[in-house]
Length: 465
Image (cartoon, rainbow, N blue to C red; front, side, top):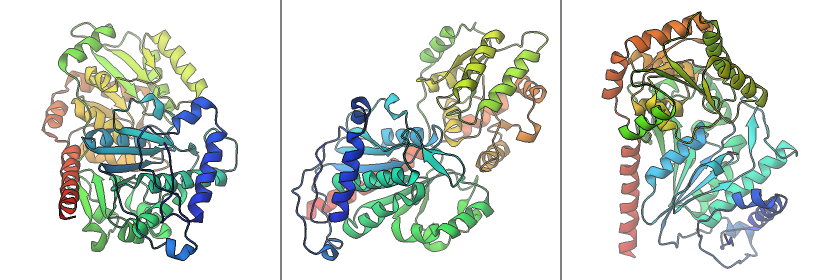
């Protein structure tokens, strides 16, 4: 991709691009290629103004005949952010639309990208605590990595010139790395729509309100975002009320409903069950903990249940550890599962088929995992984590109140309780399946309708030119 600067770019942009180029040069050839998107961007001549203050107020016009969507996913922990972003991008994609994803996910290259959609890989970081992040691979100071990430994000926005910029979950990005881009778009490309995408539940009300007040999030939402899309049902959980969101912000909020996932056909599901060695009436329990970084305790308890059984349990087991589980933990899970006759996978490329083929899924309470399971109509037993956030516990309670899932609180989680609940659900799955069949996941439908409104407005502007 050739990148150059327009009149709106100043010395800061040139320095930022230089940092990005030096970062790319430092990579091995294979890694370097993953940072370059295949999307074609307009090439503009480099012209430097002699007055930096004037440059800051120059507006940039979108000259492309396509509609460009830029998406940001910071991806510091697990698979959730990139899977959600990929799913949304795939359903917004259509003719004359380019989608470019900014991501720090180290496994983004494992996903297939259709024509007109690509990614820019920013250096990865890993979350240690809610406030502490460290470089994932390169051994340099965290501030240097954040500076590189910030400059890549800003330079990409200036080159790509998005009509729509969708930020996942974090209004400021990781450590405010998206803030310069949001300010630049507002100043130089005011017609670009900026969207913040929020999952249904962020954390408990008190924690979110305190965090947003401390970071000035309410003002950022008011000043720098055109709309806020909430990927949940307001009648299930209302963040406007829970997070004390004022009217000036709440009027920009759109509740899309939960985000559905691809549903495989019956033949594909039957084939998967056959590949897993299942007889027609044999039961299958799938255990998944998303990325797996914090999933060992769930796997350990499940294996303790299998190991303690005095006789073989009336179901087969598949454990999907996730790519971020520690190597020693993954090795232990694999060895113990093999002795118990259970199968294990680190990463499943056909997750929707695996979930659809299961009679029950045991999982943690992550947003994306639950959307995937509910899309398949499979009964679910949730083991929600409660630290560092209570988001999963609250989600489990909300969905349990609508009979969509069952759950075991962390302080009650044991091999005996787990076995009891699994057998109970397998014995009588009907009420869960019936409730799930009535539950409509409307996320894509609402987002596509909103995008079509944006596209029509762009066509009208073009017709009037």
